[in-house]
Amino acid sequence: MGRGTEQLIKSKIRSISSTMHITRAMEMVATAKLNKLQRMVKNFYDYEHAFSELFSRVISTTEEFTSGLIYKKEPKRTLVVVLAGDMGLCGSYNNDVIDLGYKVAHDLDEKFAGFYPVGARVKSRMLFDEKNVNRSLINVYSTPSYSDVQSFANELTNIYVKEEVDSVKIVHGYPKNPLIQLVKVEEFLPIKPVKIKENAIYDYEPKAEELLKAILPQYLGTKMYRIMLESRVAEQSSRQNAMRNATENAKELVKDLTLKYNKARQTYITQEIIEVTNGSEALKD
Amino acid sequence: MFRVVIITPEKHVFDGKARFVEFKTIEGAMGTLQNRSPLLAAMAISELELEDDEGKRQVFAIYGGIAEFSNNKFVVLSDAAERAEEIDLERARRALEQAKLELEGTEDEIHGRQAEGNVQRALTRLKVAQKK
Image (cartoon, rainbow over all chains, first blue to last red; front, top):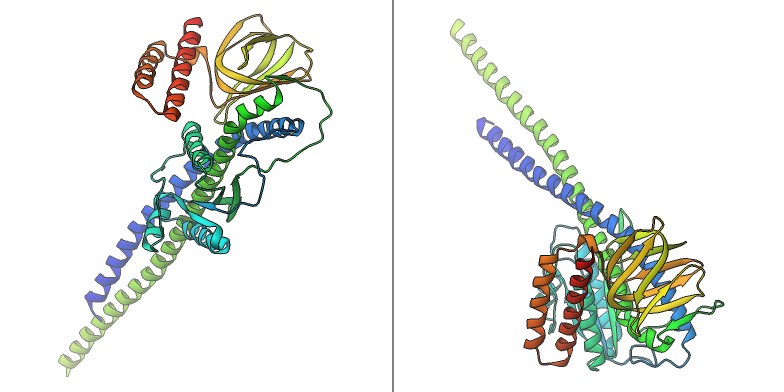
């Protein structure tokens, strides 16, 4: 053992600490984004809660409402929207979502009509796996604005209305709690109305059927925005956890390597002293 | 006096007491005082004016959505809404020009309808901005 080992360990320590700086910074960024998202989610839940209540009230009073968007019969061609991140470094989050997407497609078998990847990671993996991807939405790095989300919901509705498919499912991640992110499948179209018992008598302006027709796009936009926000929260908390673990691991590694470095240095010094004393002993005789 | 709440997916625009609200549904203009019978209305892209508990007039631009009046609470759920004070008059003017140009430039139906909506929004913004 000589100076070489020491230098080697030293450069390793240096490299790991700089990685640690980066992962710690990324963790902080994820935390900041998460905080912002959580404020948005809180406000949005108020909106969504009020809206879905109104929506089921309206839909319950409309008996003979017919729209292509409402569930009628078992769908035969399903478009699977797989919604995950544009960026990596968030643990297994992106791949968990994509894997469930593949599973859903596999289970649908003949009824499967194609994927619609949302997020650069999803698209690139689907291309790598040689899946057929006709449409995609990528590079939505920042938190999507409501109007963007509404136009995405409208686009899906258009695909549905043009009868390319008769059902749209969305696979996306959602946060169960800050430490656990799960993936689920949601039916986006057709809409399955939830009827409630309604006692109060309302004035409708315009009449209920037309009112319902007017707010259907808003309903879908609201649903999509919730999905987007939830999956964004899941992604960021997943990234926060992954980066926290990376920082912890790096800390551990640096600790071990420092110990090794000190040992190597000590061995070297001891050896040199032995050599010197041996030398002087030999000279004495 | 009754409570008025205007919420969009992105923020709470207004939450307070009012004596009188004036708004436009897709069928036409409406107004309401307190103790009205329950109402559900589809909102037009238009302005909403209310008189708050101090008798001050407040104007908002509402970009569609749905409104409910029940138990002396008036809730407006809209894709987007703005207070008159938040609107920049100059920018609103430019946006209107832009939207008009776009409307002239499009021919297919879906984009045409979208462009129409944009013009309507821009017009409303401008109108509301001038009232502040």
